[in-house]
Length: 365
Image (cartoon, rainbow, N blue to C red; front, side, top):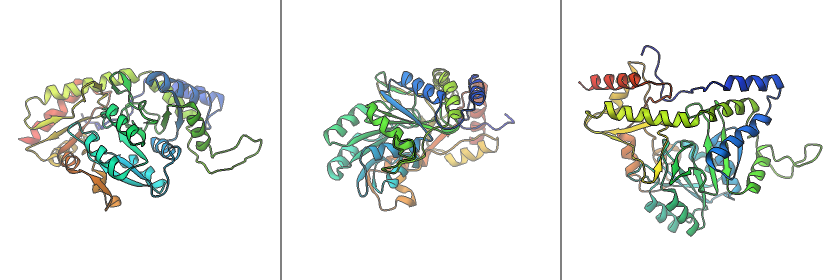
């Protein structure tokens, strides 16, 4: 284990280089191209999404979703507080105000707090982050959003391939967002995907993502847009990665079971639960620890060149969002104080997991 053991590094499947060479041979390396179409089709086929468009990042996809949902200045958007900032920053892009919702025992958005916020705040939209490869209680959340006429946006950046009663995350709401950042379960190095229920909505998203150019021989603009489309080169990597996504999911889940096996005799370790009826990807193997200092564990493993990280620091505790409204908050704060993300790259073998746990145990003695 002399080489650094990263948390969740990229893992190529074999055909990515071949596809990128095809792009270079065609000299069609700019945004759009045949591999962008193939990548979009692969994601549609895998997830069952009605319509999708490939974009430069998951953050860009969330931003487009909010704009298409009609979110504007001073509108409120309910969003989980236990998440990465990319779930929230697009709200600021639109001049809107985040209303933070705590998580529950599943580590996902607390439905009770969400309902309370929907009643009191009347948010225009709800962003639900599906965390660490798991799925929130999305059917109940979707029902509440319909009841209170809030647009449901699923932040499935961390949960591509996860399902709830057989249906893929990112396909329940008006919009779904996927990410292909470098540490995700599959990657294009950087990139994202926006899914929607209606093809007409995705057609408008594509227009906005290409500088809102009108169909004219010259550059004609009646509204402003963005430079958000994905390049043909990165899409070629994505096509290769989609071919191995099912294998990556099974390997992530296997790594999680190895950790449970080797940590079974360590008291105070609790693993992220899986909601009944769901099947997560275990994108990251995550746990909380009691009776030990998680920072001390992280430092001990870092000395062995093993990367670990804390769980997400709640957004309502970030200086940027001081004074923002939050419903609950204690659960996410506790998770942050006691949680760890463990290395779980899909190239790892059982011996690597055993080694991580062995070093952890030695650090406790």
